[in-house]
Length: 300
Image (cartoon, rainbow, N blue to C red; front, side):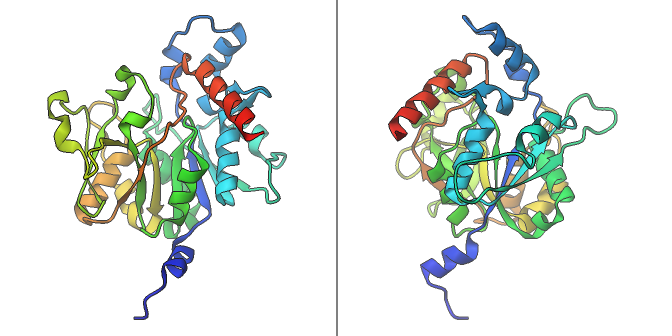
């Protein structure tokens, strides 16, 4: 078989589909408290999905900025996975949505339905599965999938779009995320082999054993839930994904580890060292606004 050049391989493997998981209940945001929060912000945080809370000088929600970054990275089709009540998402991102750039993305919607007998959705793996069931072209396609409450950089979105591995994830340098120690401690650590392929994800690692999880550069790597998948490869593992014994949800990392166990060397880790602005609690609102205002002035 004739080998492709690196440029040809990149063109062959590149894709233009981004799935944004926006159907979460935002329960941590709603339960949180923040000092000096305006009444308007309090109401928005308690009633809206995190990705729809107004931010920035123009009041745009975080999803606007995520989608704008995706456009700049070259994505042309955006799949928004919402809860069953998706009216607010359709109003903002239906046919009237407009973003900067010559080419406007096609926005497609998928609803994550809550099964009978449950009070909440079944997690991120189920959200991705339902999206792929509703848009069957994804079952044979390559795509990127991410959360709706993290502002991923254009560079990271490009890296996953053009990576030459069928499955990949961004392996963030934990020390560069700039979160407080309490939040950092909740992050699971990832372990990779000498070639950079994922071998394990360790939840709640013992602080005394951290050093054993450092990579070849001495860095502790964590995921911020942004992945590149071959739909054909991840599909059966999403369908067979078990419920987490504590959180009672089907989670993408579980499906990912089951893929790795069945096919070692199938998920590549792209090392990245940068801050990822995040909306987890009400205290994050002002920090996100400050970040967006600073970025706006730097871009001028």
